[in-house]
Length: 274
Image 1 (cartoon, rainbow, N blue to C red):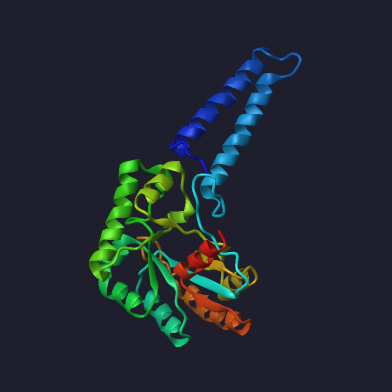
Image 2: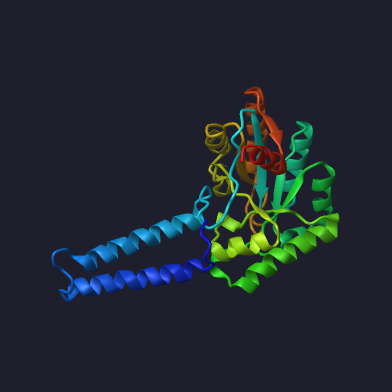
């Protein structure tokens, strides 16, 4: 785990200085013998910069703090998760499908959207689904300061608690992006950071068949699937492809013997193996 609480942008800034310093040393023929130390510094800095960036954006990376993407289990269980809602009418349509097949899911809500649709939030909970925090404005947390990050998380938790009586204990940063400070803020609030192991890129509306194939082809025991019932705070793009794909995904995975569970149940199975 990366314990020094430094922003990613600061780390990349330092790396950039090292790269520039190395290039200048090489350009001025300094420290070239017996090896081109300057070029080595520059290449090393570039490699470190790429590594740090991947640590911030890849869902499976735990360098900056522990995140959950799936569970190592012998049981055929899988968790459906939906980001960016609630967003009418698509969230209602998804809830109808989930109810039809008796499938629980986890909805990572944008606080602003939840505040505008309290009845829909209450329906999600009433029908047995789990709620997660997805910030208030769906902002890139890497581009915001500590105060703003804390406000985005706290405001959303407070909105959900005011509507349902209970604050969420899982969070998904927008785009999955995080750095040491983001992870520290989540830990201070005892929020577990949940990413995903299966991503279909359904928000691009590539077609129902594509969404289904991208999803079911990657599922294994303990997978967490990322889908979308919302469109950020804009709430303009259609999510009908995600809705229909969800029905097909449920049908296909059920036929393969999978059982659907919430993120909490996936995390419990993860804890059983730690």
